[in-house]
Image (cartoon, rainbow, N blue to C red; front, side):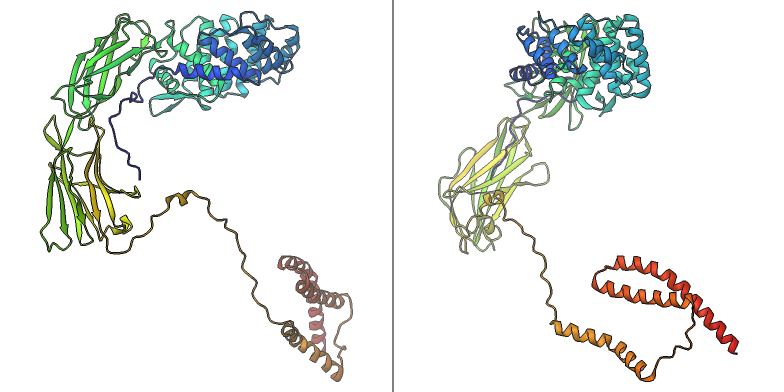
Length: 630
């Protein structure tokens, strides 16, 4: 059995409401892996462009790969090829090879918004002139038929390739598109389609605004929520998302735009005499310094009861570039527990920095604990003999052999004291472990605390009641007390006795093979129920003959008495009636031989129509004949 001990945690992330520094190393590694093996032009484009955004210039030898992978008849392929060539220093593509395809897409009435963007962007890179008025009209028509957010994003990107006047008209629609984002948990904004769609649309905001020469019209709170969403993406699945994410991080760190400030703790979360301070970094989303700040801890509240232990305390700058600040936190008066620090920042040069308030940092104050009042008691189950009690002191255990048989039980009591406050406390995990010294099998028991302020822990093992836990295996065991808590500076694994002899009354049972739980099970083969035994064929033939016997008797009586056909009316109706009647009997025969119930009912419904009509006519004729006789 494996026991997990809660040890002090040395690396917590900030709470979800805070921004994180972008995982640029992860993005760079993703691009470097992709550049070693790419199979399509899109992957090559996003890899080359993504690496260049991170400041790495790749050689022009990749131009040959671009020419090999591009499909000259596919506008999206041409777009990726032109964008990829733009990342290289000297890579010119043959314009005339692509002109026909691009012109066809630009003039087609069936082109979608994305295809229109691919064609316009490729034409701009290749130096092909486009009719901007026609493009704008086409975009307006497409907006009426496809109003999805991705289509609107491509429209913004297309507008960014046209004149400044057209780009400005599209930049004015940014706020409308922002309002269509989905808000999650009140802290992040994203679009339907996940990171791929959100990154494309958000990047379009900046591209069209830059072409229009206007700031991006996004409320600072909304921008923080978008930035929180992007910074939470430590890994992305596609190169496309990785590329757009890289561009977004650069946009969010550009001083021309609003720059979200990232406040994060860089010191261990556990506060103790050995680690008395909290170190906080203040940077942009790329991890770069944002200038001198005045950082104030507005409050530090204990999560358990809301007690404020720090108020209006200014942090000390610890770096020449003003990227790291220190908050002395440890004090013997501050009790152990989990705390949330509320930080407020004030920039010397306000500029366009946002996210300076409502920054939360989580820390915990840990303490050193001691194990006290430890008693190990061996007593009879029926209390007939006097119990033997041994007092132990950490870290020393018993050296003498301890023997117990099936008439006895073992009881251990102890308390845990916080050295700092001198109070008895509870811990999150307290176990007593028996380990068979031959088989290394572990038997774990939970120590339960008592009610009240003293919180005395107790665990009792009865060798009759708990014999099945040991599989009745009389042997020598090791006895260990295990304690752990996230607010304790150290966890405890105290060996109480290394030589505990347990003797059980019944014969020992073999240990369960837990590995069998993970072995494949025998295949379950479905068995259909066997057919019930039927009587011999002679029996069925006899009963069939008995069923037909009344018909035979009828024929015999007809032969003896004779047929009376004088009352039978002549005409079409009597003939049709008897034919229909005979058809019903024939249908019964076929039902017995080959038809199923549904087929028989369908045919019977058809036969009953003439049978009813002819029968009604025959009965009317007979009734009229009787009326004349009377």
